[in-house]
Amino acid sequence: MNMNNRVVVTGLGIVASNACGIVEFSDAIKNGKSGIKHVGELERLNFSCQVAGIPDYANETNLHLLEKYHLLEAGMNIKYSVIAAHEAWLDAGLPVPEINGTNVNNDTGVVIGSGVGNIDVFTDRIIPMIDKGKVRKLRSHIAEFTMFSAASANLEWIFALGNQVSSNSSACSTGTESLIMGAERIISGKAKRMIVGACEIPSPYVWGCFDSMRILSKGFNNVPEKASRPMSASASGFVPAAGAGILILEEYNTAINRGAKIYGEIIGTALNSGGQRNGGTMQAPGSIGVQKCISEAIKNARINRNDIDLICGHLSSTMADPLEIKNWTEVLQLKGELFPFVNSLKSITGHGLGAAGILEIIAAFVQLDQQFIHPSLNCEDIHPEISKLISPQKIPNKYIDDVNLNIIAKASFGFGDLNSCVIISKIK
Amino acid sequence: MKSDNEIQKEIIQIIEKYAFDKSKVQNASAKSNIIADLKINSARIVDIILDIEEKYDIEIDDDDIPKMITVEDAVNIIKKEIQN
Image 1 (cartoon, rainbow over the protein chains, first blue to last red):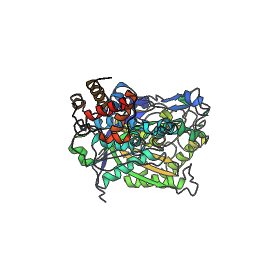
Image 2: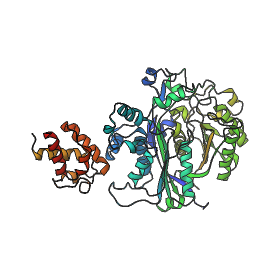
Image 3: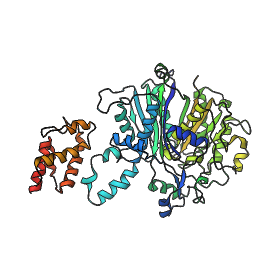
Image 4: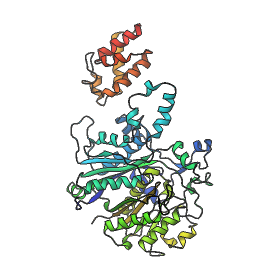
């Protein structure tokens, strides 16, 4: 394996609950603009958690784009992914191929993941039609809208990609994992460029699975923007959210030679699981596996433990938050004032499930590029187990722009005791 | 009963929805091959059939679908079903 290929990020695109488009998203996260709202349907369906983060994607530009590719009737994952990927592709300064062109871009591939896939197409169309005996009327797009690789395959078509075209899934680690898989493809020399990312639909059928576990936020249904409370003493569960995030990863020389703008570099990655042993379960991460993953990423990045300026945490507003901070303090061997800054995008957007990791990595690159740290909302009442370990000053409740951010760490922890960690850096 | 020309126009309007190069469809003639000339993805023929069935309140036999190669073929299939 060629260890010399460096991986940089040349384009970003996003559909998030609090903003569509990177410019709007940057502004929204900087100012702590929440995307979490009360959802009438969840109240009607007797959910304990009646708030969620649902993107408002259907502006004229996005609808026009979807119409161009005949995707106005597609499932939500395809729609979100196409909108975000188109933004990222243009952001990277790359030309959008003609639909009926003949050139295939053999150096570029795509990995778009999802936690649960295209459930909406089943619930909204397939199940009702088939149960009525109307399978003939499902129309021809239905198979290509439901397959798990639907988003990836549509991006392959739109951008005429000739390299790997895949979809990954690893629960709440999916988004971070998609980036790692794309990066590894480039490092191996098998691709020069990878579109990576993840998407997750808004659906009561998905969210109900977590509501039934009693792990969604409760008690904040009339104050939605306060419902997602990572690291807070009054956190009562996570707030579900939908959306998609896409990055264009590129081999360093390829990017430099075409004069691409570079947001930063992926300098270290690690993927592992805890085996659901030694404290790890299907639902909760085990510390040994978590710490091993973070340590490996740091070693892979060839940095020192105290080089990390900011941790963009997994921090989902659940009982696992204090343990996550404890794990970070133990791996970094830093506490109190010496601990890096830490924030959670989930406090602003909610938990995007399979898409969460990638939305958070995009937020990390935005902060790195624009040199600010976004606030972590709703933890004025920091959990006592956390304030024992780190200084409250390290959890910003307003943005901080008097910073020199060089290295940011991002980790995701998914059901199945799955861990992923990415270290990013300003380009040198 | 609509004229052949009227039916042809309506079919072209239906087909155009599935075209990426609309100009090819707008310039279509009776002899235009739906897949080869109008560049319609063969998978979408099923959708064109469903649209035709809905518009003319007819049912087209699955066996007739592969016979619908040109615009003229579509007109003739529709006329046959309307008369039945």
